[in-house]
Image 1 (tube, rainbow, N blue to C red):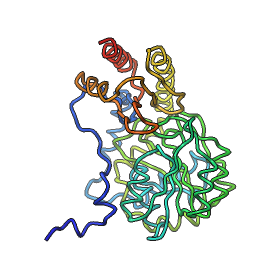
Image 2: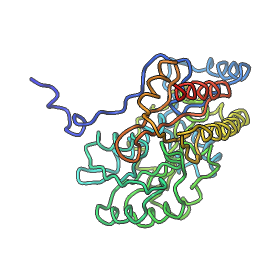
Image 3: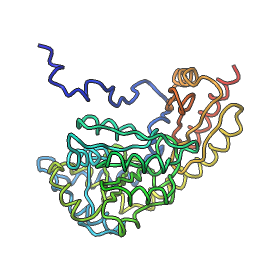
Image 4: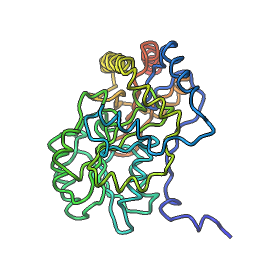
Length: 354
């Protein structure tokens, strides 16, 4: 018996998400924060974690943390649900809202997990290319909404991998035209200084995703879904009871207790981003795009497969996006600390001079 025949066709026919696993000395490919916590602050966190009873289940639904983050984001606590990273929340949305005849709409290029999770759920994905400026092609999006009535539309704000925030007017037009749920993923919102949270008071079919993964707590897997109370109430039925482990709940509360530390690191990343963006723009044949995120998207006049390979041999990992179409010879580099940024630039220049 070929057990693969028991697997859904949509799963068999896709590659899935594969994070690169290879030796490195500098990692600038995963859009994580380059900064660990200061030793004293880290010891405080671990001291709090020591008080967790590992033989007991965590608080289901993380009610205390949910209430604190509701206050942090300026929403009612029945508007927020916590997930094991944003990925779980995307999965919950697909499980709760999508059926076998439904369409999930995404602009491309964007975060690949929208397509993968929707496909794994056994449903159709409609992809609409971004325009030449990597903004939403509003007419094409609205035409697709009118044609397919997608039950879910995913918009990354800022967008990964293109690093820009879409036009707010275009996002609002898409929400207004949609009979389904529009999800605005603000994973990188801390680096943009922008949020569409105020639109929640106007649109019941809008959902905002937030995460702590990009601001220093990637290992803890803490994400937030914010939306209309009736929708969150129904989605919460799909959430597994103990989805947020007790240590992650401690870390989430610790983030709010020490938000000045994390905010300072975010400011440092933004400062480093601007310096790295300027330096990349000075390299002949390298064309960085404006960025609102903690990474820089850039195109090259030469083969990026070779650049990626040599950088990896030097122990520096960045994201090679090279593929036919708009991503031809494109790459993405996460902003590191000062030493990492300087080393990346030095090695890149050395490669290009050969």
